[in-house]
Length: 195
Image (tube, rainbow, N blue to C red; front, side, top):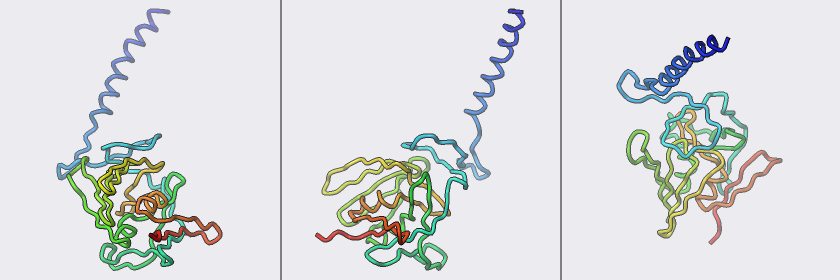
């Protein structure tokens, strides 16, 4: 009886090891030779160089409105096929996220990508601040007056519908805005601070 259990165990170990090795060696190369993203199950927030594609059911489009200094935040038609509607707020991991470009550019910030591939960094510059992050990261480095501060958000920035979405409260505060949730109006108000 003991010998048959040992034989079964000895037969299973190589199969398990082979399966694990095959998982680690999955070819993520697309037809054009570039690396393609694969779905990854994530149980903790990310600080990573991984390119991650989240399942569609992790995102929920919301009817939440976002106002910046009393004006509804709208898409920039330059980047959205001449669509000039209100920005779409999404709910991801129980947090409200807004499209980064629309918020940043409305505040006078410039957005650029530096580097390539997994090491690509998103750099947001303006109003005496430099904010850097990587896609799917919850780590933001904010430099103001030459002093860099690393901040972590509960929810990472994500790519959804071909746009980079960021947590609205965190990003508003990173831009130096006052952020207020108006539950009865189902609206987020962002206000520039009076200096």
